[in-house]
Image (cartoon, rainbow, N blue to C red; front, side, top):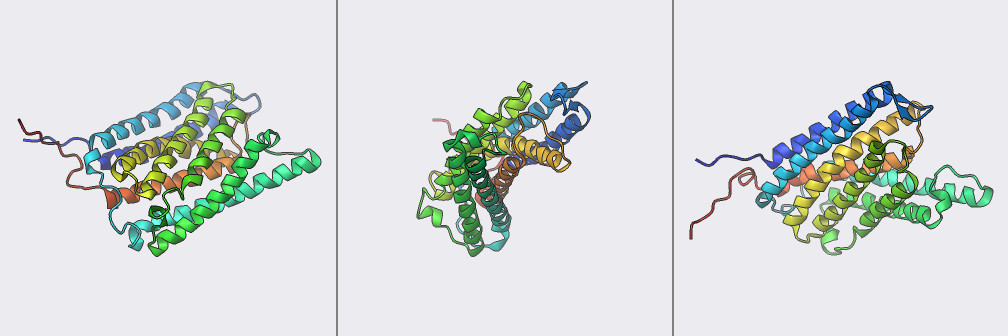
Length: 301
């Protein structure tokens, strides 16, 4: 009798459960065990910070193992992925939302650069960096427009990415520029865990965007979809709790040295939600449920 092994569905549930777990631990740690004046943890704050990083990450790693072991169930996106409004509605909505956020982010960054050039006043630490700040601003605008178009294409059931395989490349370049900006200007917190949060969340977001680019283009869809699930899961459990908690703190008027600006956090959050919604749609349309969790049968020679 063949035994069933853990499924892709279970892996997705681990990812989805890891998000509120990480968010809850981080909100408790930042609200009850953090001194915003000195920027240091108090009491059990450091232990909670490590738990908020490592526990969700461990769940995402376990999910990645399930995705990898059931890779034969990935079929790539099913034919007509965007042709039925139901499955594509979620990704289309989040694509439009992230597109709007990215447009605002890019415009705000460009405005800040003009203010710095004209009056020597800036709000972003990256603004004096010149080309790095400008590159991220321009790519934010470009990807914002691309995501808005993607939302329209999904709603209309069109797939232009397969005709122009490099069309989503600006999304990958945006993730790369974000990683450079985060590493150079914001990974300088006194605590190692905060630096790991900001850097590794960006790394996995970049890797998931790279896999998404391949999936959209239809290049090696089975392998690319598997990588999207692995890296997208890791990005989701790190980016969403980290950025959502930082946005919540910014709304309440609390900030700390080394944190990502709230508009950066909101743009990362919106893009990651698009990736996660795309993964969930891919599971509905691009996974062979009969193969998910089934043991591979080997024939004796």
